[in-house]
Structures are given as C-alpha cells and as structure tokens.
Length: 162
Image (cartoon, rainbow, N blue to C red):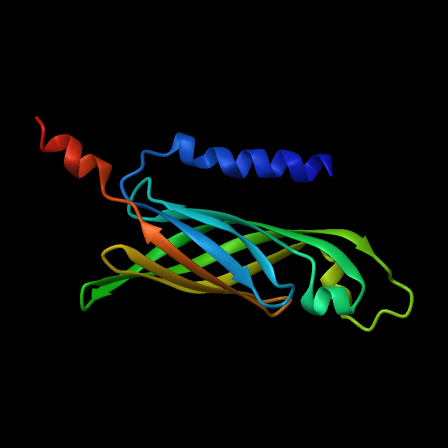
C-alpha cells in the first residue's frame, strides 16, 4: 500500500513540472470492473504525457471475488496528422494494478490478473473542446473509455497581452 501511495503522489505531481501548452481532463470508465476515474493529458513538447487513476469494485472482478481494483497509468501521447479539424494521438502507457483482496482458492481467472504490471495502447481524438479516448490493457484485455474537455491554450492568451 505504501508503494501505491508513493506512485500516486509522483504521478499526480507530473503536471506541476511540465510547461503546459495544451491540456485536457477526462472522466474514465472501465467496463471490466465498472470502474471510474480521472485522466489528465499535458504536452511539455510535441510529444504529450498522460496519467490516470481508476477504481472499480464490481463487474467481472466482483464475480471472481476480487475487490478494490485500482489502476494507475502513466504514458505518452504520440501525435498523428490532423484530420478535418480534429487532432489525433496514439497512447501507450504502463499500468500498475492494485488488488485490495483476492480469494485465490478455486479461482477461474487467468494468473495474469495477479501480475501488478501491464501495458496499454489506445487512440485519443480532440476537437475544439471535446476529447474522446479509448485505451485497452493488452495483457488483461480491459478497455477504458475517456470522455473529456480540452483547456484553452494559456500561452496563446498570455502572449496576446504583450
């Protein structure tokens, strides 16, 4: 649990060190455990960085007697060419999974569920203010849907005053 708290503090402090040019905040939903969480994107340069945290306690996890699933993710946003006024990014991230309590006797789930580390790939689309992202944990086959809003470019408005 101590490692989880340290990792969470480090991930949540990343936006403080970045020189934000474009950023977005999302609400994340995970159907596998009916999890809900937050995701934050920021761009210190051409390549962006994102981090997210989700918590779920229902769905397939509850059916297999696994409680309190927390997923913490850190990853990069690789830009693709713009199309019809929308911006696209490929997402690639590393996940850390924390399982609160697990009953292993007679469990029918894959042993990969008990490995705390995994990775994900996905795609994010950003329009003028709306953002949609879809990510999938490839080792667990757990999808995540992100719905968010893009913040206005702070740098653009500051430079117009000078």
